[in-house]
Length: 167
Image (cartoon, rainbow, N blue to C red; front, top):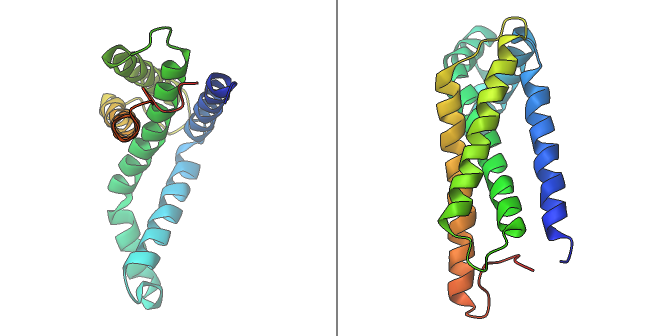
C-alpha cells in the first residue's frame, strides 16, 4: 500500500467536507435530519413503534432529539479522529510515532471542531456551542483510541508489524 498516506489524507479531507456540509444546513434542515434519524432508531429498537399514534411517535422522536444529535456529533468526530490519526501515523517520520501522533490527531480534530462550531454561528438558526466542541473532541478521542488499540493488538499479534498500515 505504497499510497496509503495519500489515500488517508484524501479520505480525511473528504470527511471534513462532509462535516462542513452537515454544518451548513440551516436549523430546520438539521432538525428534519435528526427527526429522521430518531424515527429510524425508534422503528428499529422499539417493537410496534410504527403502529403508535402519530402524535406519540413524534413526541418520542422529539424527546430523543438531543441525545441523537450529540451521538451524531460524536460519531462524525470518531470517524474524523480515526482518519486524522491514520494520516498522521502514515506521514510520521519516526519508526515508533506513539503518543505524539495521538496528541497531534486529537488537537487537529478538536481544532476542526472549534472552527466547525464557529461556522455554524453564521448559519441561520444554528449556534456556536462549546459543549458541542467537547462532544466532538470526545468522539475524536474514541476514534483515535480505537485505531490505536487495533494497531497495538495487531502489532502484538504479529511481532514483525510495528504499526499496521505502516508501509
